[in-house]
Length: 174
Image 1 (spheres, rainbow, N blue to C red):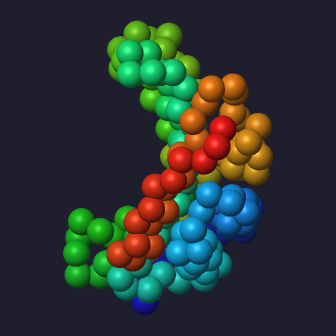
Image 2 (cartoon, helix red, strand yellow):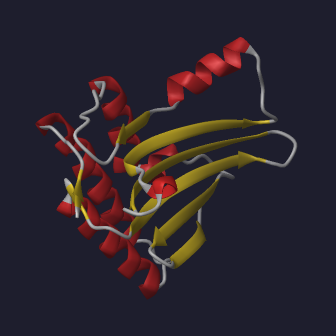
């Protein structure tokens, strides 16, 4: 069993990730297997800062707006991963959001908007405690506390769930 180093200020962020799982579990489009996987991931999150060897747990959602030519994909995810004997899979805990305009752009104004909307928090295995900017944490917490509020007419809402060997991707009604 491994540990990650968390401090008291991180608890609200992790709690919001667990509560987001509660919201996921209420979605009627999820199968019973999906819901069991979400509950298992929540158990992993509740167990933090301890992480068992062989842990692969992730859930998240994306809001997709537009078409193949011009679109915006925004996502919010939680991932806990640790495989002691595989240096490629010792990710620890990651909580993040993404903002992906299509087509991709190198325009500085577009990149500034992207930077404004994306957050990334990472706690690696071991004794490294990362600083979490409270305004960024609140941005993530607000998004996952009311995912339906992010949706506009015509948007597609996609959920992804990974637990050990289980994988599911579900498109929810928008």
